[in-house]
Amino acid sequence: MSTPPAGPASTLITNIGELSTQNEAEGPENSVLRDAAVVFEGERISWIGVASAAPAADAMIDAGGRCGLPGWVDSHTHLVFAGCRSAEFEARMAGESYAAGGIAVTTDATRSASDYDLTRLLLARAAEAAAGGTTYLETKTGYGLNVEEERRHARIASTVANQVTYLGAHLVPAGADAEEYTDLVCTDMLEAVRPYVQWADVFCEKGAFTEEQSRRVLQACRDAGLGLRVHGNQLGYGAGVRLAVEFGAASVDHVNYLTDDDVAALSGTWTKWNAAGPDAGGTDASGARTPGTVATCLPACDLSTRAPLAPARKLLDAGVQVALASNCNPGTSFTSSMNFCVATAVLQMGLTVSEAVRAATFGGALALRAHTGEDRDGKRAVGSLAVGHRADLQLLNAPSAAHLAYRPGMPLTGAVWRAGQQLGLPPR
Ligand SMILES: N=CN[C@@H](CCC(=O)O)C(=O)O
Ligand SMILES: [Zn+2]
Image (tube, rainbow, N blue to C red; front, top):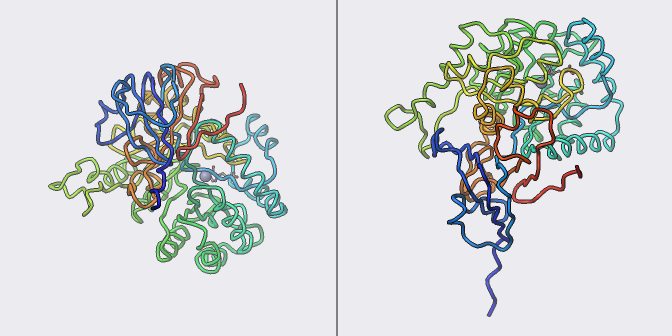
């Protein structure tokens, strides 16, 4: 007679002084538990609640009263690149302004890098992000800008990132005709990257792609079955938000220059979500709420380009769901520190600590449509802590999340679990 297979090993993390669950079902006021504990079984959370009621587990970790949060969800990065643009950064700090043309410098360096080198660089950057508490990561193509290179970058990205975005429409490469290049992005290039990507994006901005070109890209990518996002309203007022809303994009990212109409248009996409319930028509057949277009703010990029900080406060007040992301890339934001983004959002953008933490966890998950998942099929929700969700947790070397902004720049990431596995952090 055979014995049943043993279930996955369980780990109890107890004595968590403050646990920010970001669990929607608990309501905003109840999404912080005191004296809490979590149990992981394999890659999933199997129990969460008050420590005194926790079940036994195979292993036990005492958090010593520290603060626990979901792992950061970084919903906007450009990590597949080679080369360095610190000289461009220094020139900017001496008064030059940022222009999209710098992308071409990285494109040259990245095209010359071998698969081995690009993979090694990508892995190192992903490990750096994880050491800072990031447990779920999106990254993009966009430094290839021809069919073969975009395919190569998408393939490499897909071996490391949780989700990959096709950004062939990042810049028209030198010497190319803009209309012909846009056609290529919509046809052969799209077909080449398609097996590796879930999302498509377009840099809709002066110096990059016009409204009409962006519209063609979004249409073709939507027809190919990709989810959509837009780089919009970064360098000036423009059509980015409008297009994102028109196409039902999951996010519009940057959003530095917004008119009242842009804010109202974004807000309109969240009406159902904000009034969810069967009567409001805000849920689908399975009871899941209907999300709109997330406004993704990139504070590290805003500082590094000396741009006005995105109006996150105004967006939240208008009922828009906001994500915070690092935008880690060599041109405008060479950091993957979500702690830094959260601190900046609190100290300079008018968000409360809990709003900023929510934007860097649940907000990022919403932008990637990874906020829900079946507790059966391996597609687990991230960005919040609840039974069945992926066991992505970080403990801070601090008693509360407020310390992220109260002690900015300090090494507060104490321990990180990704899909139930504790990551080795560099010694402090
Ligand atoms: N804005 C467009 N793309 C990147 C910057 C890319 C670069 O300058 O290399 C961004 O998100 O900021
Ligand atoms: Zn970007």
